[in-house]
Length: 316
Ligand code: BG6
Image (tube, rainbow, N blue to C red; front, side, top):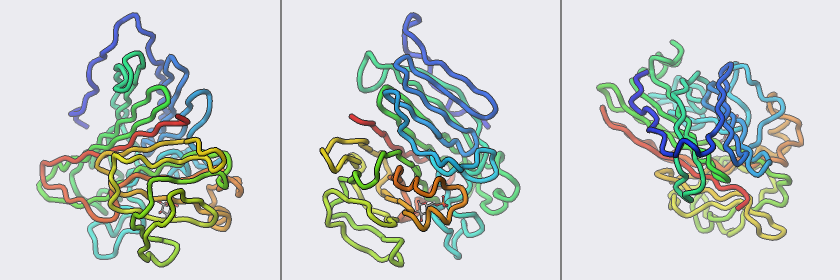
């Protein structure tokens, strides 16, 4: 694809220690001088590991298939251009659940380094990935015949992972899309997890026939199958995943242009029902907090582009 979003020039001095990058067999890995690291599979441009302070932050199922035969169970799969099962009467109706971005091979466009936006002594490395309509399988291209370009940027700095996606309409026709960053966060024990920042927000409960409810908890506990789409959130207000024991934050997530957040945990029965989820008990070690734009459709006019993203801080 055309590298319209070519990574910007390196903005740090020659003597500054640089990130170490490796690209091999469709897997991109980068390690910062601080030791923080990332692994991204070009299949789906799926982040499969994020290590910070020597600890893994991202949940990856031990049974996840990493051979490109199925979307990766865990990490940060990308949902585009439809969230969930496509509606029958929509342009996405012939696509699989969650669209094609998580099961297409993306191009690695390159890395760039800069000072972190938060602190001048911190280094940030940005990895860019691209996917366009010409790179899709024939099946996907036929099922969704729009000329699009996606650039997915994954930026790592010490303690922070940011992922943002730019959607471009490169054709003559308008199209509608939904998008979501399906982030599987790793937790030690789901019973100690609380999700804050959702109080008084309206959500669609997918475990209760997509009925609408208002959140009454300021610290949501997960004690059963949970599959909720929280709507109309202020993206600048962080969603905080914290410990019930001492209120310490595990993660804090802010978003840009992504006003919905899905909270998902399959719990025991659903976990057992997923062939690529394992071990069965692993539902206790994950919570999906998924920043997206999924409760309505974004319309993108010919020639226009749209961008949204998230920034996750770990164990602050
Ligand atoms: C969540 C949805 O985002 O993804 C759930 O809200 C769905 O309904 C889950 O079960 C996992 O989807 P998949 O296609 O990866 O099994």
